[in-house]
Image 1 (tube, rainbow, N blue to C red):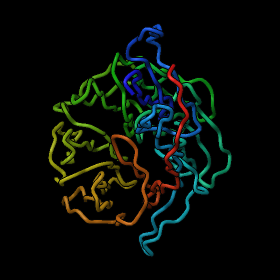
Image 2 (image 1 turned 135 degrees about the vertical axis):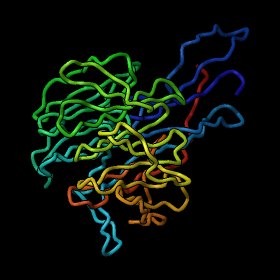
Image 3 (image 1 turned 30 degrees about the horizontal axis):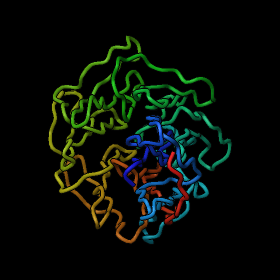
Image 4 (image 1 turned 180 degrees about the horizontal axis):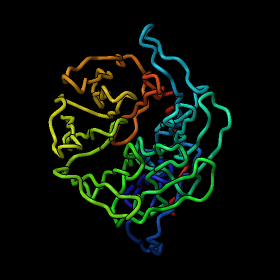
Length: 343
């Protein structure tokens, strides 16, 4: 439009709003360099385009929503799970009696029993749980480790009581914490330190001494996960084409599998397999690789499944009995014409 610049800004919980700012003054207007908010929900707006006469802005309005489903391997069907809640980052307590999840798209942490009863909200705005798959139950079932933040603050490591109450930030240093995962005995938490774009490392924090140490040779590895039996750490290469296995006893890495694209990955409850998907591949599927012999097999075909697309990564979960959980996209997308007056 010449006089205004339009841009999209992601708000807390991933909501995207449209803003405008004047580029320059003219003879009749003083310049205000303060951005002006054009939209404020309940839709997620992006791709703004001005009309030729400058009186309207065309934009895509999205209502993000999903329903949680379980993949039935016997029938190949996707069945509603936990009433079809709109959620991601589903995590189960070690005894299999409780489940936590992050509401989609607003990013609040909830917990409930495995049958959906005794539901309790554990976090709320302006705090939001960040990073896909970033909430995990402690081995004793008393707390949940999350990475989260408030607007304008780097992502930090927190412990959340499962019975509700104040979040406790773990002062582990000025790291950008992503994807915390507990050691098998609950004495430490492993996390991804996303130092900056394109640079990453894996650290472990001892919960007694609050000392954070680097996992050997973990530079440019992402998404670490400790096996439930405590023997291994799995991580992916920054390029997203390899899964690597760290033997905690020998302190050495080895290649678990190599694929053209690896997205989300997760340990099986029995520690025998690592499940993974092929990211944003056109023919999406979920695979698993056997830790003992590195044999890979496809376990779910997702090419006709309408899956939620989350920025930067995919997500799936596993129930205590090994069933795959997925986010079925039931959101809407429409083009809107917004009346506009130059601020």
